[in-house]
Image 1 (cartoon, rainbow, N blue to C red):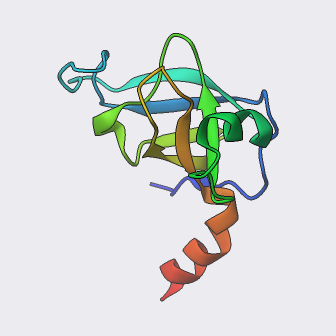
Image 2: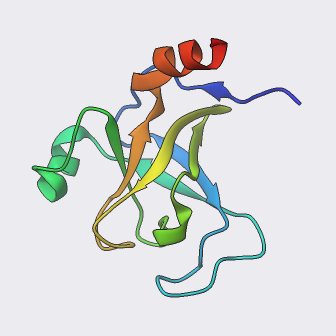
Image 3: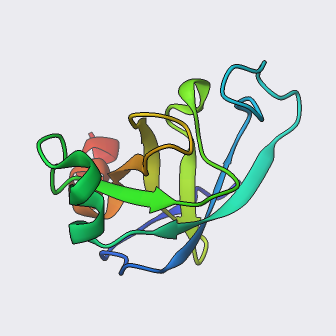
Length: 118
């Protein structure tokens, strides 16, 4: 099998991405036995910083949606755009209450590629 590509550029606000994982379908539910996926929207930096002013770093991206969101056991789950991984779920202040935070894979892609070669 071929590995998935890594994102190489910043995604703009309002870009639609797909998140997937086996996390619960409700905040306090059990993990799903089936892979779940859904569409999320990338938030621009200013909108995200309104929720995470002191905790937001340039290596994080925010997503938001009113119907679905990654939650506790979803840590590390991917966000994909055009068949490339752009984020890995890193947390947030609450499921659906605040934007979800993802590690910005594009900002770390050179480091990841060099680490894989070692």
